[in-house]
Image (cartoon, rainbow, N blue to C red):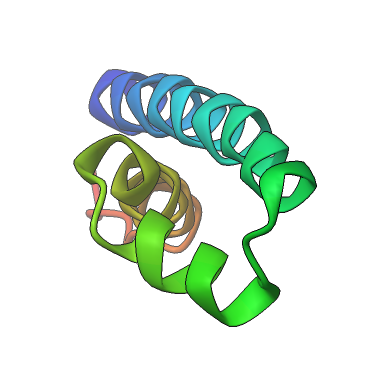
Length: 69
């Protein structure tokens, strides 16, 4: 149970960090980037991948199989 909570909190932190960077990089749209160039740019940035890694961790902690005790 404690492992699930730790994985969930780690996933939440990574998702939050990644979302903040994705939101910050939205400013690129105001200087002339179109949406496809923006998506290509953020897909190459490791700090934006934290969002998706965090989502995987959150979902895995929610749907992790429980051991019979």
